[in-house]
Image (cartoon, rainbow over the protein chains, first blue to last red):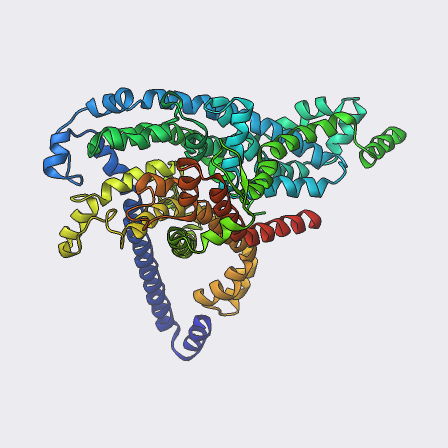
Length: 304
Length: 301
């Protein structure tokens, strides 16, 4: 379109005029582009700030005293400064213990479920296991089930096995529930590794286990890092399983502990905010360390 | 050399060594024992009247019949529908819009993406408490309304049955939109740029390029995102539980929260299981279509 216009113009008017015209068009286009860029950054800055604001407000709220919040409101800028809120949340609210419980559950769960899934994915992707497709579908299907279907039977099961109200029960169910999805994702990843690897390993006389640990597992590291970061936040952030399977207050993870702050420090919003910050820190740290794999991990298994 | 290679190849085609079968059987049995078997038991439980201690009484489909005259259940059903629709549609559109704006790598994009994406890292409980503080009387929301001169609209957002559900949805959206954006960005990156270039050369404007080229190319991603959103909506529990516990007057009660209170708090195991089965049936269509897609993808390669 524009190209057509410029060619007609150049053929009908003098060359000098045409040059001036082209320069003018170029300047105009540059101005439009600059305006567009400014518009883009302007609107995106506003949206980003809006999105980030809640985090900032909670951080500011968490260092204010009760009286300050009570008189000036939740939204006011801090006029007082105190870390007592964090001390209250940590000890009085039991968040310190909760954080410990969460880590005791999350870390073994991530390691166990990823290792088991890697085993299954390895066997399914590198060998002609009978009913391979059925097994994969059953495993993935299990992970898609609404958790509500499992709450009552799993609670009964833990009572029968004598592990009700123990962290072991939470680790076991989180592991069992995660396996399906992780296997599916790792299966997709391992399948894309070249088949020649296997021939080379067989020539060396390596058995399946050595082949797995020395060749396949190291090559799967990127997918494992992504899934690991993701699995950690999922397990760490869980609330439903722990309030279903645990009764003792001393065993509650940080999510449940921070939720009960509302009952202990009624309308002490600065203490609740401090608790919220404490409860958020571990997953934020994991996110910052593994940011790239984390975002990649979310897209894994959904887009191929 | 060739005979060795042949032998190796033959082994892969034949039946796998026993150790490989063990590697797949152990995880499969763990999931079967911890997930699949309990789910099947759950269906059986829904035909009982049982509190977990005394003798279970088989009541046939009575629990399901009772559900349809249970006002709280019907309200929870309606709220779940509103939730799925509002939460689903808004996070789909919001995520898509943000992905389109932030898909190309240019200066500042990383920062914007991180800001939008950060909330996904927080647990739903953290999200819920954050927004609970904002929706309090004299909270951030009221302050904002005062600031723009709409102070008359102020109310106890989480205590008013007509606004509580929407207030909770706002909190859930804050956390979900960034997630949907990431999925869409990955999908957009997978589109062959030469197709878009061809459309540009043919004179398609940016809307035409989006509507006739980009969007149809996202078909698979759309499917995944819609499935995820529906399943997430039906599973949604933490954010409601931590913000309102289903109240006030059951105005934020979802099927998932009602199931929890009947089953775990009041120990009506059969009745609670029936609600769980309803949630499962609502998710079933999406689960099946997701599995079919996974299967066909598996076949292709």
